[in-house]
Amino acid sequence: MAITALPPDTDTDIARVTEALAMITPRWNVRIMLALSGPPLRYSELAAKVSWLQSGQLHPKLKTLCDAGLVERAEHSSRHVTYGHTERGAALLPVLPMIVTWAEEHLETADHPLPAIEQIEDSLTLLTRRHAAAILWVLKSRQEVSGRALARIVMPKSDWTNVYPPLRQLVADGLVDTDGIGRPYRLSAAGDGLGPVLGSLSAWSAGQPLNQAAHHPVWGQPLAKPAPRPWVSSQSRPAPAALPQARTGEATPTWHNRDLFSHATTVRSTAAIQTGGPRR
Image (cartoon, rainbow, N blue to C red; front, top):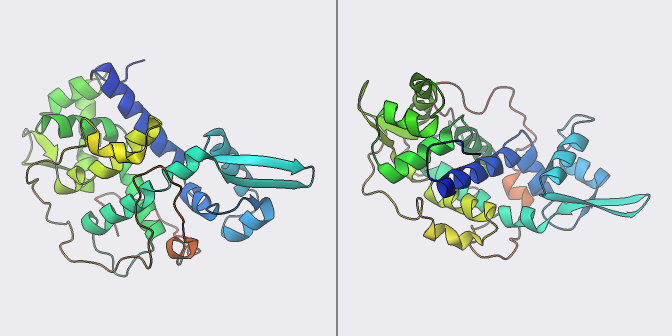
């Protein structure tokens, strides 16, 4: 069933990427996926790696990841059960370093260097705003679009003014730019910089190797000189120690959990991104 007024193949592409993001964005899902990098683990071994989860939180998270096809439960005997990545789950992991690379370049500079895992979680929060994927797709393919035209494309069955809350949020998040009320909307430098991430998620969702991202019909080509936003950091920040490089082939990456989990047990009590833009 179509969710936008875009061509069916584009509509399906957006729906797949939105679904992929929905699998990994819920709190702790990425951390559990990273904790499972390596040989399969018993429940008690995995629980020790994600010890910040309260009693009873891990099991439903694992069930959700198993239902999504990212994690598999192997019952060797009545007392020997292990959890590990499925092939699909392992194939998704190389997208995570791409997200860190994007965050390092485009999100606000923090008061102190953030662990890579927190950069991933902050970035996913931006990408899963309501209607974000569809709006980004349209602006990437059409460069500049009015709010009314966006509404007709993105939410054809809703009142056209309903497009403005998600648009304002994307502007506040730094992914979309406009010159003012009544003016067209376009991708910012940060929004256009998401090309490798969204293209790779599209390839993964379609069961293709990640190196197909470069051939994505929308995200495979960069915009010509996208205008930067004032808040986008122009200073380089220390890279997370020994962060694994993004891979575009089909091979399963080798992850070093200690690098991505640095300070991971420090649980933040507030939302990673607050209203008004990414609070880094």
